[in-house]
Image (tube, rainbow, N blue to C red; front, side, top):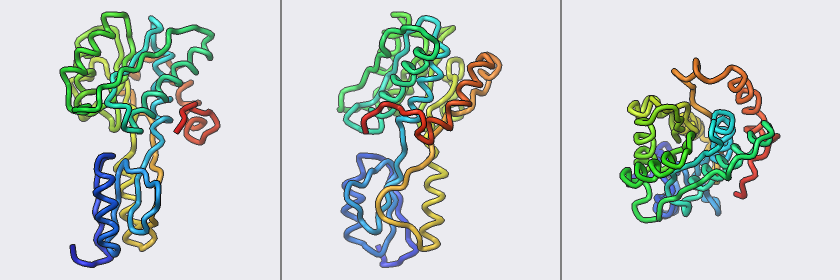
Length: 254
């Protein structure tokens, strides 16, 4: 790469972290942005764009806890060896528990099913069959978080009536329209806004090494806005800023 301080290279994904660190050290005049790449030791020209996935997962779980009729909520996930996936899952479980306590109900523990590390994010068949197992056991709100593996779960859930599914990362109403029959919301990481902010900082010469925490939240309910009780929507709206600012703790050990 040419030594030019206006060049910005973006690498996406936890598994690219080592390569990004190596490249950043080799080319100190180039700015690097690593999406989903937590920086344990800061490199001056490498910024990790990371997210509090536990908070997005918690909000999704809180909604699930208010929507479930059977009290059985679950999640079909990529590998828990990737921290963001584990944060999503544990946040979701704790959000359900928080809602149950608020409602004065005792739900069975939320079931989190993680894929083995190999091919964890590109196994839609496993995602679908795992979701089917949960459906057959009466689970009626299921979170799918794990690339194509999670998508496989969402697509299977969409074939069954009177159940909800929750997507991940982006608003999957747009990226996976086949899941719309069950897709009540998605636990989002606002990656586009985070990347745009960091590129602007790079342009101004203010981009710093280390970590930058991007925003998270729930996607719109879309067609489900007419089906979710107004009281539930109000509760989710009220608790959201408290979760995001840390007033309400997610209980996830990071």
